[in-house]
Image (cartoon, rainbow, N blue to C red; front, side):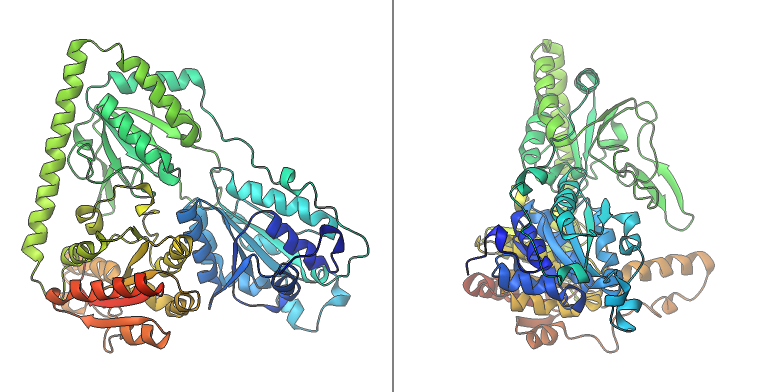
Amino acid sequence: MKHAPYDSHTWGSDVMAEVVRGLGYKYVSLNPGSSFRGLHDSLVNYCGNEVEMIECPHEKIAVALAHGYAKASGEPMAVILHDLVGLLQGTMGVYYAYLDRVPVMIMGGSGPFVHDHRRPNIDWIHSANVQGEAVRNYTKWDHEPRSIASVPGIMARAHRVAVSEPAGPVYVALDAGLQEAKIDHPVDLSGLAKLAQVPSAVGPDPATLEALADKLCSSQRPVLIVGHAGRDPKTFHLLVELAELVGIGVIDTGIRLSFPNKHPLESTDSGALEKTDCLFFLDVKDMGKATQKLDSISRTVVSRIPSNAAILDLGFNDLGLSSWSEDYAELIPVDIQVTADSSVALPLLLDACKRIVSSDTPETTARRTAYKAELTQMHNATWQKWQEQAIAEKDMSPVSVSRLASEVWEVAQGYDWVLTANTVSNWAKRTWDFEKPYRHPGVHLGTATQIGISLGVALAHKGTGRLVIDLQPDGDLMFDAGALWVGAKYELPLLVVMFNNRAYYNDWEHQERLAKQRGTPMERANIGMEIDGPAPDFAALARSFSWWAEGPITDPGQVQAAVRRGAEWVTSTGKPALVDVVCQPK
């Protein structure tokens, strides 16, 4: 369907829809709502559904889907939330997108702000004086245009703010009265592309970056911890080059996939951190999680960083710091700190290190070689320990988490695969080969985030021929079971393998710890924690939404064949499949 020219807008919502399309959005997710009925009509009819609508059964799923799409594609996605109540339903998704630094353009119907245009009761109880207040503490920016002429500039600014790093969600409330107002004169959108042009990324101070490079290259036992830097796919290869050049142990937190997990310098859980003399944080927002030991009972925290280690940091630091959420975590003293976008600074750092290493003495070269050999030995020993544990657990029934990861990997490696979010207690990272940057957009963010994000990842890879795999926790799917309908409706290439321990086990484990401390009955720790009695039949649930499905499976010997059948279904039809595997509590 051909769209009308810029000067033929009939309704205010035509202008809004034209702006959404003009900003380059390919998809818009939503749960239907009357407060944006004008925009809905214009997107479908004026724009011919060129910005394809993804209908979702809940607002939180709509936001989470956009979250996953942006992580996997590198492009923002639009969302529309129904006035105040739809916005409140979606707040969980908005907050997690904010925590994960993901650009999402959220629009919402509002008002009408002209009171005498409001319907009795319903438009009043669903409106707020300033609707953006509901999410202002965890969006980068919000606004509510008061005229049609102001819509292009405000939405263009929202787009710029969302995608400028550090990225995040924005919210624009679009008044229902403006949506449904007739246009009495043309609205010029010819300058939209320039208005929406994203400013250049933040570069580093040259002298400070050079000092950081000097310190990194002169250290005896450097270790690098990487966080969000992998949002730029080039990071994956640049970090390999940097690590091999200087001799650095790399710990990938998994916030984004930034480094190949089987590389001999990958140093997660190897003991390299405890021996370092120079710890380099690269685009890490929370420096504590990867470097601290926690006693869960006493809530005491002990640093794993040697007291004499120099600490270096390159990232956004206090840019975008929230005055409300403490997602930035504890402040750690740093010796050299560079504020910059890592996608700009990392190539410059690599060049600086190349200049320094080119002047290495034979003694320095030998020292780098010896340290890389030691890191490799530690890496191999860690992998050997993991494999021994997997062998010891392989015959468990219900299925051990290590066996689940291994059996799915036996199937996945035969395809061009993508893992959506959950790594099943890190066992996917201990058994799979993450050798390309698109293999994994980053770890999950907790219960009630996984299935929605996974749908978005699958949407981003639709049409590529890739097999998108979701290792799906049961508790998470219980929050958002209706999300399965979206996968069937839009024929997403998603293979869901249930990580089904029939429990909210993370919390169950906490109750067990307290039972040990307090001497209360261990056998009562399950109360309020089980997803059992009755146990949900996730395969039956999936089939009710027109998915191919098998399970529940408790015999480890049957897992691989079922997963293989599911993968064959997804890749041959382009439609989703689910395999329900009952697992050991982990």
